[in-house]
Image 1 (tube, rainbow, N blue to C red):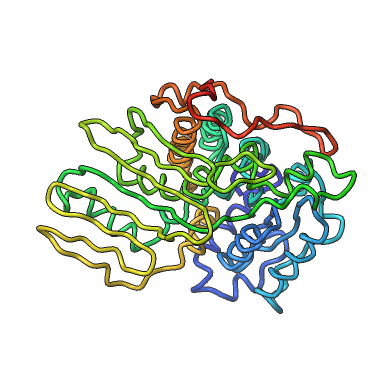
Image 2: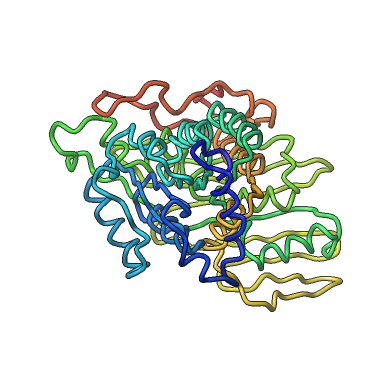
Length: 428
């Protein structure tokens, strides 16, 4: 595979030939173990397990050979779930000595002779993880978002440039980009079916993802770092906050509609309505993005039990509107009426189908710049809400605020910044 030093010309040739395996099953059946695409998984939670199962489904000869997590029980649970999805196919080949534990376990997976690494850890780790994988010549699937702060985003952009130089595939978990019904409606938006874009309103109203347990449930002797990683969603240095970790999907669709051009600035409101004894994230945001020519985009997100839930997009143009929403097909109303009429694909599977097809064909795909832009769009909104300031894109990209610690060890004490107070929390 491209970028993997051990690959020979014959192995690369096989991968390209095997791209037509559906038409020549005997070829794959005759292949030996070295002709497989070896997959490593870092982060064995639900999303990581799902990604691994989809990766193995994407290619007849993809096999899982190494995994990493901080929890032995999670590894066991994940391997059982993935094996169950591919029962009898011998696709899970993870020996005990390739089941790695700890904060440095990601590097052990990278060093274990895999070809592709799937990253599904808390996003604070993402810049460090994908940098190590790309430097080692590995193809990458990384869940969204790509970072939790501007320094992390800048690091990712440097890694993206390196991945292009090395001709490696880099696919991001911004799954809506791989949804065929959204691809169809965005093409129509870009082609002028609703006229000139005027405004975009996105909602991401849902329940809490991982509520913070009370402090008395913390086991005696557990370090700050372990406690926070085990409750990662509630700490900005790990999750980036709900706007960055969850509603970034909505930010990504806004960016898509805007042809991935950044906004000029944004202002935002947000706060913590339901108190928590620990953690430092908000439970609601509303962000107002200003684009050139006075075009506005609005993103509202909330994660509070007992409230109205909605995940929808309302794209307003000079000649109509485009509607995207959970439970309904993408629709255009106005001078030109249109409803998606095809069969919707499985966007989570499509991500991996695209990735593994690119590897087999030796034709790298790279989501790099847009995945960083969408991530920064959400981080920028958080910055504006936390500080109470209007933030320009240039200010956001040049920010020196580091949310993820530069040095980290499993047993260290770590006291993250307190809950932000708009008007008092400084923009750095």
